[in-house]
Length: 413
Image (cartoon, rainbow, N blue to C red):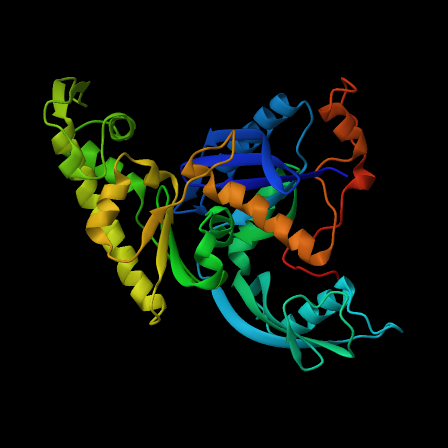
């Protein structure tokens, strides 16, 4: 069975739908569909009637590329008001051989979350940290022999309202959400920092209107917070100072702007027309100083947030998000941070840009959850896979092949 997963990142600047296939554990992008967002503010839905048409457009573009519609997605949502708690659960090994199976693991995960989730909260993720077979700590309990499986895990919850608003919009366009993933988990899954699994560190995603600061301990999310500043604030500063439109400001930033003013040149110039119809000559140095000033503010706030989220020594910081693609961003990081820091780089053909970090990472994260539960899954059924392979020309969708809704949990009821 081919393993094909679709993920959706509904960002404030753009909506990104990616369909990826795992071949020998390597992620290959089959389709990337991106359209400008509407109806969102700081990552949350404000006007669903504006959002629905652009969501439909995004899925339509994907269908044109693939030849078949995408009817199921793993949905990424912002890390607003994320709560993290530790919990423990036990599952009795009932089979005659007393061999631990994936079903025993799922029951233990069920026990971990029992009566631990508030009425107004939605359980998003269960992240195992310690396994015990009888009283022995083990790395992987599957196929081991014992009478009971004990599990210590991290439970991640978010307000139900945050989740439900996205689910209602997806239901309105006829797309099924098979699971929901916090953006921080997706970003971490694709970050590519090899030593993250053994250290405590921070991951900072600077997006359009928000910056998400997440703390990970040995690969497990322990804290997350959202700062309501992002790349659009840079655009606003440029637009205000030069009296130009926000669209022109963004294009200036992307074309000649640098994140570090020290690296810019005064003789690098561009001419634009302001809102009064007058010509304005802008040099790279002045423009980059404006960009650096705002980005430095965001980075300083992110650093303060790290210190608020944890008192432990941070051993690394990874940066991602579309804003990290600004030229010489690494030079600015060197000026602000003394801790080891890197810019995460997406090395997946078809989506090599940090703006795709969350969407790509969501696919990798969900694939890891499937492995944990020993489940097989593909967004397309057999008939659709034949069409994808070019066997047929017409789309034939078998509704009976769609898997049961997995939303919110890593175990079967």
